[in-house]
Image 1 (cartoon, rainbow, N blue to C red):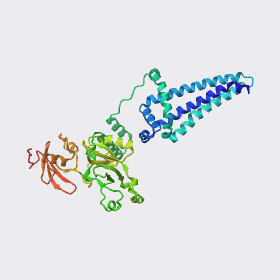
Image 2: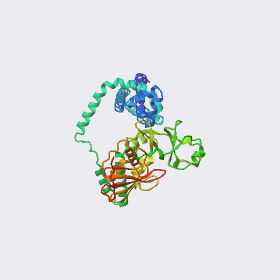
Image 3: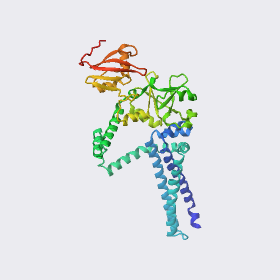
Image 4: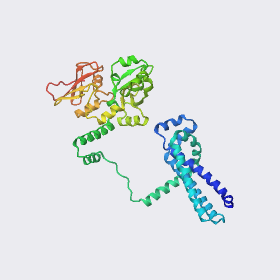
Length: 423
């Protein structure tokens, strides 16, 4: 009894330290388990959420401060536990067995109440807990901030002393990846598909979104999702139904038609999801990253004036990467057909860049996206049957006109019967 009376102030201090350790352990688990969507919603959850968002802008500084405080608290806790254990050992009513039992109990207590329990609770509701603990955590970070540069320098010096021979790995070249694919399988068909996927990944890193998008004229647009008959009875034009704003100038939502169940047809508004907006000059790889980050399916492409020019879905991007043939139009026909040497048949919506690659020529296509637009700019009007234009070492002529677009013939300058065009 005398032993308990003697050490109870120390026990109270240990209890307080456990609470602080639990605070920092739980805050670490909550803040660093937030999903990208949770992080975007922090600014809408009050002052606590805004503080948490500000702390996460510098995660390395935040983590260093949390770990510093946790280490300091735990060291103080075990120092007090050692003092209490010594007092219990020398107390007549205690002894070695009591001291050992107390030490084990102290260790199990801090493991459970300051590590396991707070972290388990924090990951169950990370957004709510992050907003609660952000204000005191901000104070703790500010207090320890002057010491953080010293901690960083110490860590760097220690790592160089302990692992002096470690060197960062060089970036892997695409040739190395292709070589690894060749060595990884003997299946010729699988090897071909893996090569195709690799080629597709490289292409989207170099392709701008205006080359892959569906132009506005080929999108499936609607003004009212509640008009079920107009949607169901209308022509099926795409895997996504685009919802326009009241002014019918911009797409605001998209409905993945291929994923709909019969019950959804009575309430299409409930399955419509927001879209993202990207400039026409963005690379497809950047658009794919943004779609994944914001968990969206459709990106609306706008020009430099903010006007709607087209849209691209994540399905179309993945099809570009994985499909066995990329040069397909919406009719399923090859959009660039080589009729014979020096003579090609091209669908008008093919991008100027894609055709220039296929023809192995350099073209100034600034200001236009498609081959039809290229001819239209040269003739200063919408392409008509018989319109022509020069493109590098080739001569373009509109040879067929359909409701959906035009077919264009590309003839090399040295092709028999070709006529030069003068501007």
